[in-house]
Each structure stands twice: as structure tokens, then as C-alpha cells.
Image 1 (cartoon, one colour):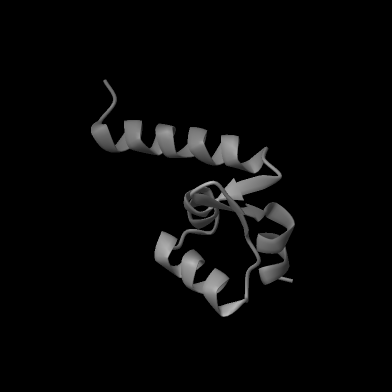
Image 2 (cartoon, one colour):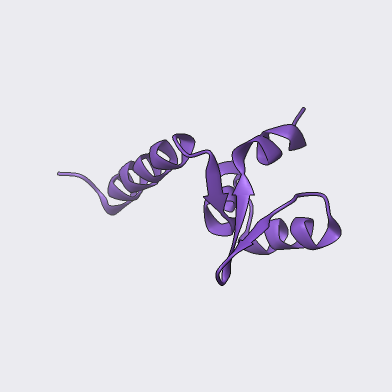
Length: 71
């Protein structure tokens, strides 16, 4: 029988697999991808370190922008 922790890890892995297949990410997805809080991503957008496009009430970040943070 699986423990709650094991189930959480399975769900988190599923979410990361889904995120890895996207070219454009929400702020939440971007934060999950690099393992930081949403606030840090939002602050990076406000500081101009990360570009995002408003899409309704959300902001969308291109995946290549996140990858460029580490290059």
C-alpha cells in the first residue's frame, strides 16, 4: 500500500511531466518547474529579469525565458 508521501511524489512527477511538454507556462507552472515560489517568479517579472505576456488575468512566460535564466 502506498503512503501519502509516495502518492504526492507521483502527482508531482505527473505535473512536472505535463509542464515539461509546454512551450508557454503560467506563473505557477514556471515556479513549479524551477522549484521556487510564485512570488519569486512575479518579482522577477516586475524587475524585468523575466518577460511575461499578460493573458487575461494571468501572465504567460515562454519556456525559453526560464531556460535562459540558467545559461
